[in-house]
Image (cartoon, rainbow, N blue to C red; front, top):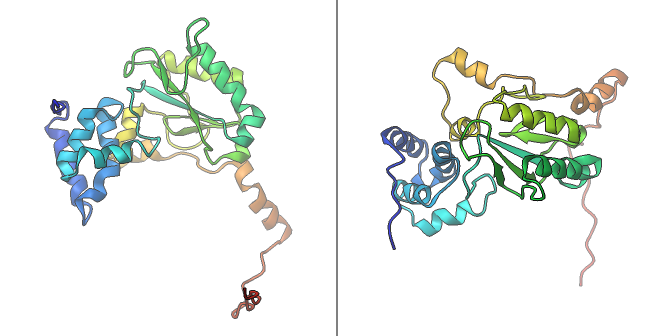
Amino acid sequence: MTTPDVSVFGPDIVAKAGELIGRYPESRSALLPMLHLVQSVEGHVSQAGVQFCAEQLSLSNAEVSAVVTFYTMYKRKPCGEHLVSVCTNTLCAVLGGDAIYRRLAEHLGEEGAPLKHEDTAGTPGEQGSITLEHAECLAACDLGPVLQVNYEYYDNQTPESAVELVDALRRGEKPAPTRGAPLTSLRDVELELAGFFPEDEATYRAGVDGPSAAVETLRGAQLAADNGWTAPTMPETPPALPEVEKK
């Protein structure tokens, strides 16, 4: 079998891989961030990416592939400039997530051929290209239906607002997320997920700072504070567990 060509991962990526390895007592522990590093170069984990990680970490290709195929954040097909993840888990689906996904699939697809899960509208990697995917729970039930672009949140969406959002992305715009850091490209985010940020503090802060808590999320805590509600403290000696009937 032909060995994949890893030359796409130049000296700078090799240096970053070495830095990742140095962060862990066992080199194989660097595999997860190294896979994000690979995705920052190619927009997905190719066979060359698997080979590169295996060589850097002295693992077999099978060991690397087992991890790649387990985690959904590692993509096996080239992704667009932006990854749009629509939550279609129970609550978001009931609130309109399924309708949002269907509308985007039709809007981004061809006539009579809507996009399927992890399909891309446009040429992968080029400006304005978009990969669409179902997402299993984005942990924002209080703000549903939600979607993410490159893992940044856009809350309280409708089919119409979601179409406006992807149209702006296709024009090269970067609409501000509802909360979190300013929007960048998927490959830039993958580099951050690998653990590499600008060395300049101001540039770093500008890239990651942003509102993170929503009014809806804090409403319960605010109600408790306004009404003086507190949870009972744990007793110093917890009550004994009931006896279990012997079989």
